[in-house]
Amino acid sequence: MSTGSEVMAARTYPFSDPDRLNLNPLYEQLRRSEPLTRVRLPYGEEAWLATRYDDVRMVLGDARFSRAASVGRDEPRTHPHQGESGMLAMDPPEHTRLRKLIAKAFTARRVETLRPRTQEIANQLLDDMARHGSPADLVEHFATPLPVAVICELLGVPFSDRDKFQLWSEAIISTTSLTPQQIMEYLGNLHGYIAGLIAQRRVQETDDLLGAMVKARDEDEDRLTEAELVQLSAGLLAAGHETTVTQIPNFVYVLLTNPDQLAELRADPSLIPAAVDELMRYVPLGTAAAFARYATEDIMLGDVLIRAGEPVLGALASANRDDKVFDNPDELDFRRESNPHLGFGHGPHHCVGAQLARMELQVALHSLITRFPNLELAVAEQALPWKKGMLVRGLKELPVRW
Image (tube, rainbow, N blue to C red; front, side, top):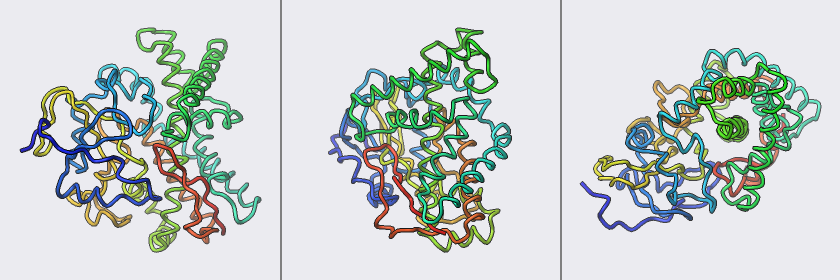
């Protein structure tokens, strides 16, 4: 057993700049020889980094590891600005109180009612892309407008305002792509925009999710403060499209650069739901582990004693490649019998929109594969431009032809 009080030199983290969707091989080495390691991020205090599946899952799910304890601490992070307080910095029961207000909108049953409309939007976008002609940028013509349109309809946000709130939403996933001043400006603009939509619903009720949250706030002020209403709504709008906008091109890129697996999906589209979950496991979306949990008491994690008050980061991408849980973890396998991946997180902060994201990704892949059976990259893989200075890995453009 080792203890948190023992001196261990902290590794610089992230271990390297992101290389497309490749996972740094040091994660595998650490899982085998040093599954809990000390790390120093560009900003904030030192932390433990958990790399094995069981340890990461425990950090995310055990109530003795707290997100709320990060408030007031110099949280380890890759960006100079401290993150907003809000749901991501809460523990139950406060976190549960807010989550329950929105969870009903994202149940599997509710999401399935949105599938036909999502398919209509996808079909229209692909019609437009076909009219534009080959080649076309998949990010611009399909991957971006599809999730944006769906979250707009769900929340009740005008799709015509997408250019504004997409720009402002970058503040939530920026590490260094925006200055701290820009981040504050964009967040202020986003919150002001949402406050305006809330004011409209107090004049005229609507039956969308934003209207339901306004009604919940106004009928029972104990359930939601005004600041929480604005912050929660802004978070839903931003998070409700940003990650899916990023993952659609990521998934298509993986398929276009893995022709055997793409051919398998084309031959049997019924594999697409399993493929979406396998791609969630396989694609390391984050550029680094984030959102440290703080130990509220001394806790054994593996054979390491984490002292009370110490922060621990869970490396989701590393956990999803743990060969103790996944056979041949570095292979893309759409026929896995078991796939308990952590791509949507785990525990109280498991992504509330996971079912919505799954459905959108399924529709996106199925629509693309069936509409454009000869889809391929329109440029050399090495020429693809990748985003920089973000919490997530993603393509700026994905030129394709058919």
